[in-house]
Image 1 (cartoon, helix red, strand yellow):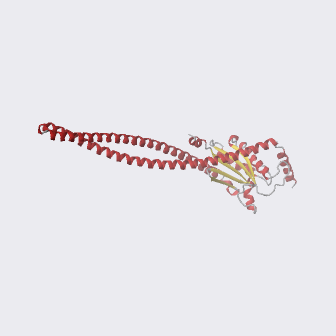
Image 2: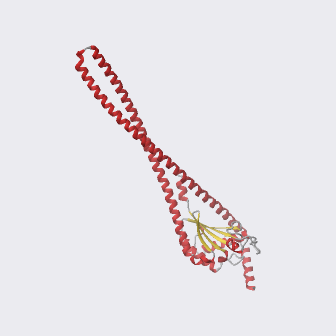
Image 3: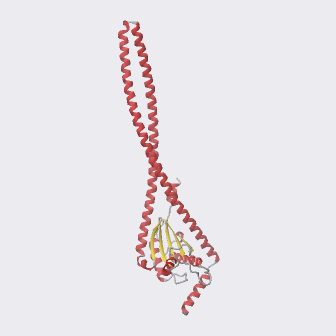
Length: 331
């Protein structure tokens, strides 16, 4: 009993030595974390909306391209019919000219009729030629429009495919990382540790009993072992950011010293975990952020001992870097 009191006094003195400036820095990091989390959530929502809009545009362009193809086929048919009529009229014109020449001597009246017929034929022929030219212009315009739509459609399809490929790659990488983490921490599965994938992120949840003595923010030996095993898996991951969140139950904190309440305790526990990951775990601090949520984000009811035990936890949240997706969206 005396030994426990000494350890508690030493822990309290250690916590009391934390500078106010360091505490303010940790609060600022927590705010940055929340802002980043909101940004990633909005980015994911914008990405989904962009993908839906691109799919709708793709369907409209496909329908428009189909209609233009039908128009082109119809104009092509009209063009062939007019060309055939034009050939027939040319042939008739030649025959009339020949007949006029052969029958010129048969009388002025017949010649006049032939001349009138010839003029009428020539006028009709001219109208046919004009119609043919207009049809050719319209056909060329339709073909150019169709080519433009097909090119735009290809670009849209390529962009949608690129976004889908990147999303699939991110999802596959997250799933593969989750499996590696789960396998590495298999020995702690029945000791209050879970690994889940939610909304494209990996949540490694460790109940406080696995990491800390009651009311303490000093990681015990078993907790250090679990954190080092985790660090060995994710240390070389270059394309993720990691948020370490501390959580408590609703029971008021009864300790003394620098730790004033559950929120202080959750922040200090998160910071202790980060120190293990960057120290013995040899992880880069550039990808880590520590924050505390106190009792405000429970995962179970605080009305039972079992629920409180689940709420007293550390969550290590691994999120993929979405910069590549943002670059494509902003192009």
